[in-house]
Length: 348
Image (cartoon, rainbow, N blue to C red; front, side, top):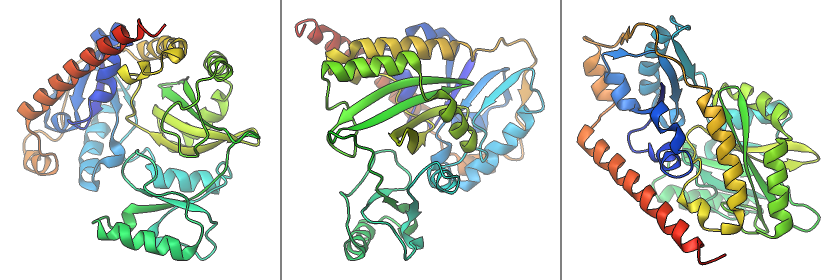
């Protein structure tokens, strides 16, 4: 059994994949909200994938580490991916990649900016994965005004990240956003998005030559060795890396420990269906290899009993709300996938 551990509100990342492209995995997976995990009495043997660790508080990480310390005493029965406190969050990862000479840019909190900042830069929030909140800023005066305006919206200065811009466009001004998953020990290439925009959130260009290039990327997995080293630096066993290529080497934008995998939105551009089918097959095969037989004995939660007051304070949890939200996402993903599949039949 594979236990997929998320914040209670974020099970949709894997759920939508199970309801669309990855139905074969459904019998292998059990969703385990991190709030429910902390309250559990015992843990059954299996593979445990921790996601969302980047948005946990220090007190929540401390509690989870006590659980993982206990489970790690039974390596034959428990396979643990992404240890709490052992996997780097975005800012620490980008700093490490810059220091190691992998990334040519720095990402810094707004309260710790050096004098030799390389412009242009852009600004984003520290704890989300939705990209920039500004365009490119060309000078210090513009940056200081942007930071001040962002603070007025209630964001603490240490949560405002300033990133130096690295241009990875080709000779035609086209940017490529590569993505790949690490699933246990396997690098699974996800996609290439092509765009004339430097901040890429989707596949803007779907010319036949770009679709062919994406398929070759999925089939050949050309960057897997470099990506394995980067995931190892991050201390991760599961997640998705987003990156560009500059001078033949990866330039890493981020690693998301709980990303969307594939959903109904993947059908919005029917020409890319072959790429999604190829990825889904690769991801399913890698995920199936994570499955562990439940042959050992259950392990007691070391936080049971006297620690429960601390746990409930750190992890507020409403099981009725969770199950309702989970059911809503379940139905939504099924209906949307059906809608896009039906619509695309008339676009051929």
